[in-house]
Length: 318
Image (cartoon, rainbow, N blue to C red; front, side, top):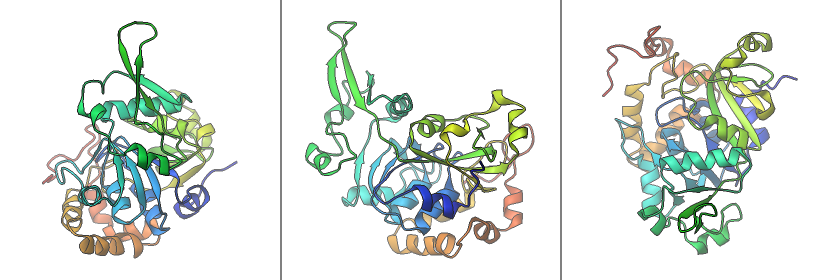
């Protein structure tokens, strides 16, 4: 059975208001922007967002009013915005609930979720301010059924008496959004380059939506099974979206769009300018092809990586 859908159909079918949404990629690398723009178009609300080191796509979700709770270790467009501005404004003014477990613990948490564990023991946080300071209080946690009652629990290591472990709860992810280079109609996915936490959040999620640069046949993708990242068993929808990670880079396909990141940095400084940005690049582009048409073929061609290098030599990066 084919799992190919439009972004509109996939988001409408699987993502509900109040869901726990996990977003793949890494900062300015292979972020699922095409899918995130569709979430904004559909005005999803009260989302509990999970992500490792994250980027401007989650910042857009926050600025658009889609997010109530967020668990991330970092949100930035590195080299352009060191802390994303809509995220910072929302935290500083109490518009969202925010918790931080650190980059390494956050990715370990997703692996625990992929294994079906309700928690996973770590040592990383012990002795740090992350253990002493909670972004979300126990009182706030009681109000939200998707949040664990505790940020963590410290217990004695059962195999090494006298040693302590920090038991960190894993999220119950409703939907994962991932962008990949290749996918097939049956849901098999091939990520080229670093997979980051994407395989774990896909396996942990109740539903996984994957956008891809290129849709290939089931037969084609099976010719090299050792190169594939995800089986169709954990993928619910496949959305063909060339340049679907723009403005972030997609390894082997295109580099990141420096000018777009600079424009977003300026636009995200105020809510008014951000809203204008969203109208221009999201609301006035009802489909991904409209967004690509707005960018123009020349701009996208200039971002194509040089074969064998994985990046664009001489690309202006600031």
